[in-house]
Image 1: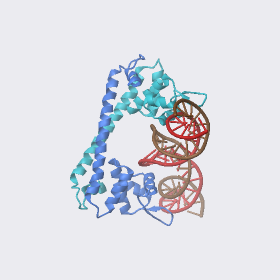
Image 2 (image 1 turned 90 degrees about the vertical axis):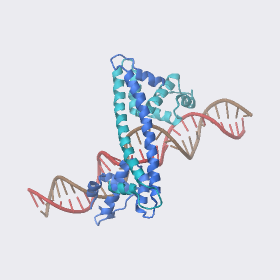
Image 3 (image 1 turned 30 degrees about the vertical axis):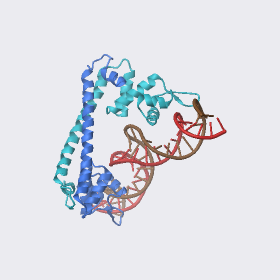
Image 4 (image 1 turned 180 degrees about the horizontal axis):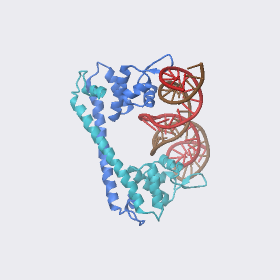
Length: 128
Length: 128
DNA sequence: CTTGACCTTCCAGTAACGGGAAGGTTCATA
DNA sequence: TATGAACCTTCCCGTTACTGGAAGGTCAAG
C-alpha cells in the first residue's frame, strides 16, 4: 500500500512516516514508480510507534522498544526497565508542574486584574 | 559589569544571556573593548526572565510580561490574562501526564519482568 | 488530454538554548 | 616583560521530533 493508506491505518502523518524512515525506524519496499510500498507488518510497526510515542517514550526509546519487540529472545525485564524509568520521569514532571501550578495560582489570586497598573504578579516576578 | 558577573547575579548562563540579546530581550551597553556592560537594571530584567521562564512561561510570553512590566500604564488585568491562560495549560498538562502515568503503571504492573520473552507491555503497545 | 489527488526529494524552520572553535583582552604572577 | 589563566567576542553546528512548502513525477477519472 502507498504511504497515504499506511498513514490512515497507523494514525501517523505521512510526513512523520517518512521521517521515521529517514532515521532508520522502518524500511518499506519501493515500487517501480519509486513509491514506498508498505506491508501489514510495516503498518503494525507504525501503530506500535504511534502508541509508544503517545505514551511519552522518546523516539530513541521507541527504537529500543521496537528492537526488543522484534527480538524474540529478549527478556521482559529489559522492557520493564525502560517503562519503569519512564514512569519515574513522569512522576517528576507531575510534581514539578504541580509545584508550578501552586505558585502561579497564588499569583493569579493575588492580582485583582483591574485597570490599575499595580500588579502583584509582576512584582513577585521581579523580586522572586 | 561583564557578562560573567551578570550571569552570577541573575542565575542565567552567559550563553543564555547572549541569546536573549540576540532575540531582542535585553540591550546591554558595550565597553571600548567590545565587552558587554550590564547595569543593575539589566540584571533586574535578567532575574525577571529567569524567574518567569522557570515558572513555565515561554520566551515570547516573557517578552510580553517584560513589556507589561516596563509599561507603567498597563492594567494588571493584562498580566492576569497571561498568567491565567498559562495556568489552564498547566492543568491540562498535569491531566495528560496523570492519564499517561496510569496507563504506564498498569503496564508495568502487568509485566512480571523475568527472563521469559513474553511481555505484556510490548503486547499492548503493538495492539493498543 | 487535462485535472486533481497522489507521490517523490530537498530545504528550511521550529524552541531555547548548549558545545566548541578561533581569536581578542585583562590581570596576576614569575 | 613575558606568559598563562581566565575572561570575553563572534560564528556555526547540533539538539528533538517533527511540520511546511517548493518543485516536480505519477496515476486514475472524466
